[in-house]
Amino acid sequence: MQNEPMFQVQVDENEDSEWNDILRSKGVIPERPPSPTAQLEEALEEAIVKQYENRLEDKDLSDLEELEDEEDEDFLEFYKMKRLNEIKQLQSKSKFGTVFHINKPEYNKEVTLASGGKDKTIEEDQDGDLKSEKEGTYVFVHLSIESKLQSRILSHIFQLASKKFPDIKFVEIPANRAIENYPDINCPTLLVYYKGDVVKNMITLLELGGNNTTLKDFEELMVRVKALDEKDSRLIMNQDDEESREQRHLKFDKKEKYKII
Image (cartoon, rainbow, N blue to C red; front, side, top):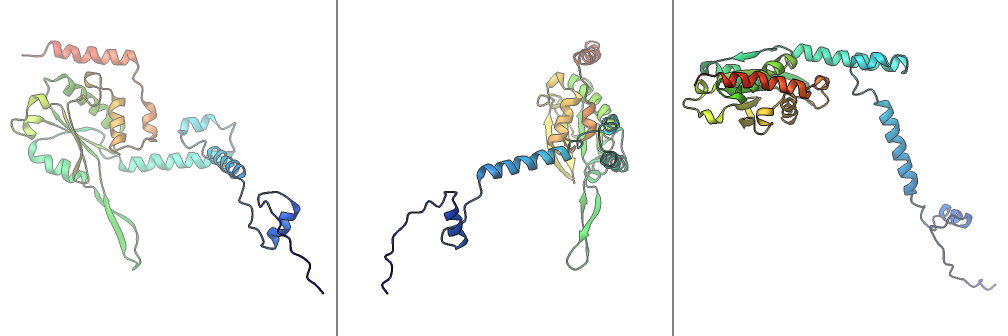
């Protein structure tokens, strides 16, 4: 019996046909790659679900209470407990709450050593031994001079920030007491310590806004140096409208006018 003649058949592997399905089941041609459209639709659907699940992530307690009639009770309660726990954690770290005025002999203890923090246990290693790392404290230091307008502005901002962020330490020391013959033109000088090191230094407030520097400007700096998380709920309370800005200028400009020369 003679063999039937063989014919070469051209097959379009991307064609959606019953014949191609048979060939794929036999392993003759490869499986079709997943449709990019389907993948995009799936990714979009996942993003929408994630966005919906995290819709309460940036809400504070007062916002959550206003949603009681709109959200599932258990889901809302979960976020309320999460916010309360975050507040408790902040309160446990809230050990400052004021501006510390120091002299040079106290500098090492109140600034450098204070920023080193304490040992914090993390987890057990493979041998079952506890590992720990230094839990640092952010310390903001103002080398001040009373005769400079910007220094008085920074002192005022320190007072506000120390009460608003009591887990962060704020220290002020006259510049000529900290460093002998320190140039007045460099004041105010801002130093930020963390774990014993200077992580930021700034001469005058030019980088923040000069004579127009606000608490909001300062808080943005705190976020940049990682002293605050950008999602910290305390940052939401920023209010610095034109009226309050003008009142602040009048307050400090008045001192400038009547200073003793």
